[in-house]
Amino acid sequence: MASDKKYIRDHFVLLLVSINAFLAIAGIIYSLIKIFSVAHSGYIVQYRPSLGVSAYQTGSSSDLVAFSVFAVLILAIGIVLSYRAYKIHRQLAVTVLTLGIMLLSLNIIISNALLQLR
Image (tube, rainbow, N blue to C red; front, side, top):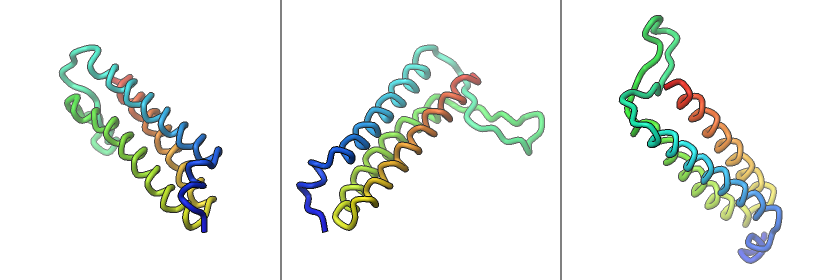
């Protein structure tokens, strides 16, 4: 059983937390700059291939701000879960932080793809 002090002093865990924080901040800044740089009336927020001609669904900018909120949630929940999991096993905390990196990367890729389609 690891103590709380070991979580703060574990260099690899702190590296993963730093990467998570960087990806979250980069994703938030990138998406908010792209959303609010040009006033646009309709953003493409969904693609439904089963709809045929009207496969692209439009929405407002608040629909795309949800990507920034999602990045904050991934960061916060990932850090809290890894902190609690570190008491059980170190590799479990590392796995949680690594999955957070993957989720934040996918968040940036998908928000970029939707913002390029406007």
